[in-house]
Length: 160
Image (tube, rainbow, N blue to C red; front, side):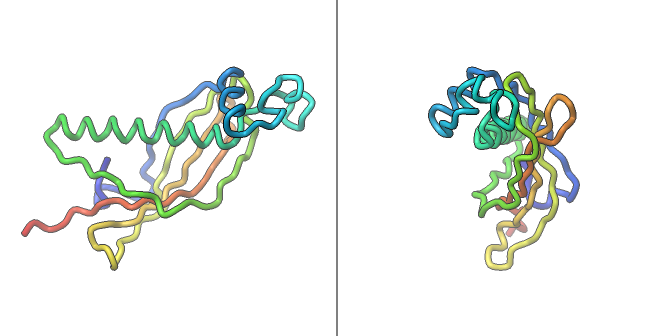
């Protein structure tokens, strides 16, 4: 993972893709979002979704899983080069979460993040704040979800 100074507006990370099978949709829904159209094919077909639909929270949770895996991969690559990876801090939040199209059983969603803005912090000069637009696109090229997230990113401090 990079440092604040390494980031640029428009920089994009492709995080990978995920196939939402019926079994995975039902397993997630049974634990976290037990609505009929997430749990039963017939109920899904009768719903406005027209099929067994993944919970929006499931779709976003997969984004988180892929983001963490990509960050761990980048940190390991940096360490292998003998570099100290920049470990991003916590997120102060997100906004503008939208589920734009249903994700149905059998859909493959490809995930990405793109830097929208960067700002230095005055109260904590060792950190900057990066806003990233996070998206998922299905196999038909349709945007299925989007949100704007914020994250603290470490800054390189001058050497004493």
